[in-house]
Image 1 (tube, rainbow, N blue to C red):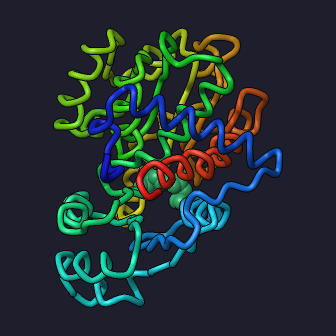
Image 2 (cartoon, helix red, strand yellow; image 1 turned 135 degrees about the horizontal axis):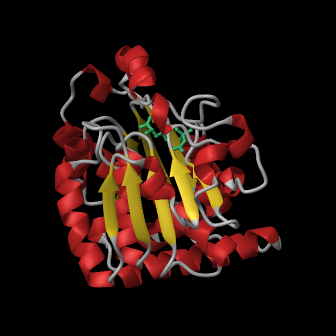
Length: 305
Ligand code: CP
Ligand code: NVA
């Protein structure tokens, strides 16, 4: 594994190894055991979109591993003024031991990984958000004691989270049911590729426009914002269109009694999720956010040490 760009590129065994390492690093950190796997190494962190969790968890994770995180806002580096991805890759590989990038175009991340001789980690594109889903799988495992055989229901916009969740569920054998409004289904190419993962693991993938059907007997209910970064101009239209897709008390009543509610955050209470659900007893959103730290440390140790 040179890069971490898509869960579809990882084998089930590779994902299992990352999860195992994440749990070990978490346990060590809780016990105050220092781990200096990346002593003397530097991670460049390119951001062309906003972030709270990703930026802080990568910076803290790198520091805990004895390395140095270097924040590179696209507003400050020449990439933001039109320098090519190729030249950026060729220059940064001379200084850095790894690059983490959050940007709009997924192709830019693929190009960066192709041209840089150092590991590249995808910290969110318009298409995928694999670091989030790795942390989500860790969180589900911690709460449910297993992954295989569970049912995850995703309700809302078929976006980068949905795409990565389909890959994660397909690889790890969770049944996945996605409910979106018509025209807002997950990416067609990702869906086709994910189907191969589901066929291999034996889990099922359902894509529907009916939230009740998706949530029926679910172990996990997941949602995300209706307005992703870059879609701000469509906000009013989207809020109208998605109004029947709020995860609220009535909808979650269709899930198993011990269902858990998940959201990658940032959340918008009263839109994609009701206050009662996101702040209720089944919500595990802050465990999820915490696990970004541990899961990404596992990715960095695996790729960079
Ligand atoms: N979930 C997530 O990636 O959060 P940030 O946008 O705050 O990094
Ligand atoms: N779908 C959201 C996820 C944020 C972590 C976005 O892309 O803005």
